[in-house]
Amino acid sequence: MLTHTFLHISGIGKKTEAEIWQAGILHWQAFTAPATAALRPVTCRLVENHLARQPPGALATPSYFHDLLPASQHWRLFPHFRDKTAFIDIETTGINREQCAITTIALYDGHEIFTFVQGDNLDRFPELLARYEVIVTYNGKGFDVPILERYFRLKISQAHLDLRPILAALGYKGGLKGCERQLGIERADLQGVNGHDAVLLWHEYRRSGQLKFLHTLLAYNIADTINLEALMVIAYNQQIRPTPFGRRNALTMPAQPPSPFQADRTLINRLHRGEIFQR
Image (cartoon, rainbow, N blue to C red):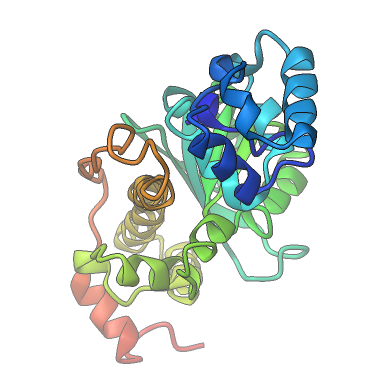
């Protein structure tokens, strides 16, 4: 999609980009006469000047397009940099990003699931993160990334595809779980578990030392993370569908990988009935 994109050019909006495509100019190399004769002179100047200055290595640099495109259009980067992408979600001790601590982190790269736990291997997360050039989160710009940067005292420089504005542009709102429900993504044994439950699971694990609480928390954290890939593919396909490239550039839905941790449904049912976690 990136070589079909003109929206990263200052002064070019979605309407003008559509006019360029309607003129039969479907990629940068085709922006030449006589096709450009159908466009307004100001459009031609803006595009020609930008393409003349565009770095030769732009297509190998996700941050170049990330910095120029609106957040709702970051979906355009996904297929081109998919093999360099990490899907990330964190769990914390609360919702106040200035005071909460990280309890667990899950990272999925489309092939392998990695988990990190406070008091065990959490400090290894930055080393793994450095392997990737793009990250995908849901509301990560407002929550996950600021907390990660504060906790690890680092600057996350990867191009960041935040699904919250991407899905909102398609009309899907209501948090990660709400978007999943609207798009038909099921959670099986984790149905009904939310971020508040994740906090309680952590505290009970630390209090009791029982692994069933940690494993249920990690199963939840992993589900949040691997579902980001499915949501990213759905969002990409819905966004590209109205374009001239919708049919040939659509992505196949990914298979959901098996989770290395399983949720304890009996424990979750007791939690929701208020039979445990009494403080």
